[in-house]
Length: 195
Image (cartoon, rainbow, N blue to C red; front, side, top):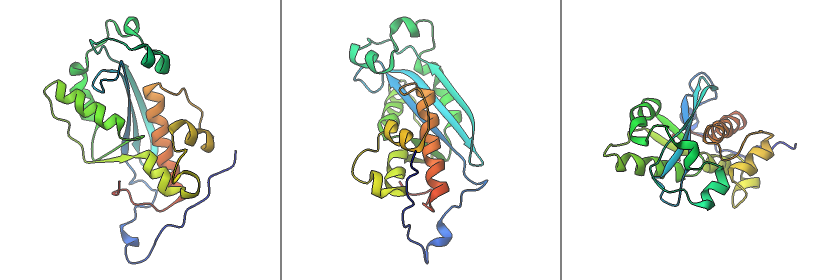
């Protein structure tokens, strides 16, 4: 596989604001799968925990959305009502998910942030986090010649970077979103506090 080229990142008076890839790079990456077009119908959650610029843990949990499963969504992720029967409802997982979300949260596009926010809202709870970063935007900034305008789907970027995974498994997708951010920061000097 050909490695994506390095972008020319601006430096100068703001250089001190750039976070080098080091022991300071801590974040969690999240991904969800939904049962239907209602973004709060989460049927699987995946969280990848990054500490000191390394993926330390990946947590995946099936969720019973107590909602119908659209054949379109089933065709994408393979999860149906039989698979989630007996698993916890999202409201039972809110506290555990909240404990994982901290200062910096990553997802590939903002679908996952919207879905988790709506699911928390549906449960009557508020979602608290620091900064939410879109790994698609990180890739677009890190490798603009390749992804500035198109082609920045999770599958395309993973393939280009030689990352193998089971797409549309929430834990695997969260892990890949984390790996994309780690690769981008290893290849560039992008700021962590910009979306």
